[in-house]
Length: 518
Image (cartoon, rainbow, N blue to C red; front, side, top):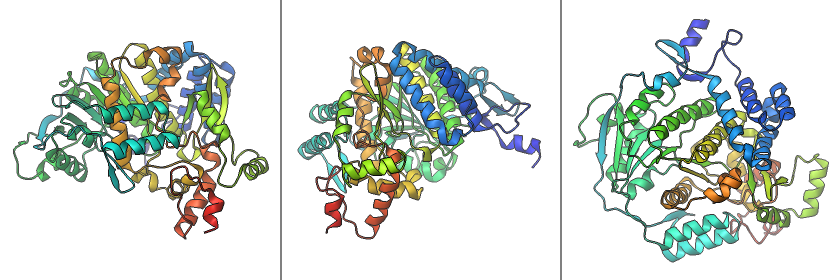
């Protein structure tokens, strides 16, 4: 394939090419961005990151150092975030019919492409909190008991449990008339259907894929809400079938970024812009940059617009000392002495402590999974940096940590599928998508209705924005780094397939040795 053909195949928001590298290395870009952020607080580690030869294997320690620096020096957290975002912007360009350019100038110099279609549901508004879990739907007192059980099992932080209990006990208002912009509206763990059920208007952005849009349209028609869709031609909302609309609906966040912005600007009364789109590998970083571009410009026009996204448990965080104490007290399915022996024999690669330091009265957790790759960590860090900057500027942010979830994209990786099945033996739980999106929608709506917010403690410790109210599924409090027990969890998940009894609870009282005796 010629260079010209290769270039034509790369359209939209892409990693910037140079004369030296027509096909830029995503690892080199990642090194540059992380090194630039680290330089604000730790020039020595920044220099090492810039020269790291095995980025694919060693990137995790640099991302953890970013968390550590922002925690040790909270006054530098915003400058670290700004430096990372600025370097990221330098390393991406938008390739369109007119060639390659920076994305920013296109914000005000793009012709409209999309027209709007509207789908209105006819159901009655349902504002109750209900959570599907283990093939049951929990509401009212049973749900309260389940939330209390999750709190006792250390599946979520106490603050998160209190938010859910408050949401359960207090009558929630209808979302009729409230507009939400969802980037990646069809995401399995996104809040689209939960918002529609409560009567919200959802401005939906997702890729042009008829099957995807048929599902969204049907969900809207069965709800009390309204779905607003970008299309490429006018269509009537009064129709007997969704097939024609589904075939012309959708917009590509990567290749039509400026056109999407032009279309979204008409919804300047939206109360939230949620970023839930996901792609594998390097495209996840490109997607994060596209969504970041849209968030920046939408919040600039509407300072009351809340920026919302979900954090991953497989990252590095500053947590309370209570979490550290819980980690220290946890045993394992095979016993503490055996775990210590395996840790020593493996050089710390197995059964390593989840606590990786302390700073400013907080403990530091490193749950980064190398199997997810540096691009995944970079995409999630870009979102965290934008949240840090937005909050410092007085803008609204909803950043809640979602539990490990058995989405299609995760379980398509057999290693993760088996690992999630085996994680319960270590006191952790991976939720089904319908459980996660119910819980996370409740957390989002709490953030939007919370007039007090978290300004006080997050100004003193900005990194706490990302660990407060966390629903981590027990991955934080299991006592061991997620990556250091992944292989044992995979083995246990495989054994489960051939008859190993499942733990009866998310944090079983009977450990593995009891299960093996059956």
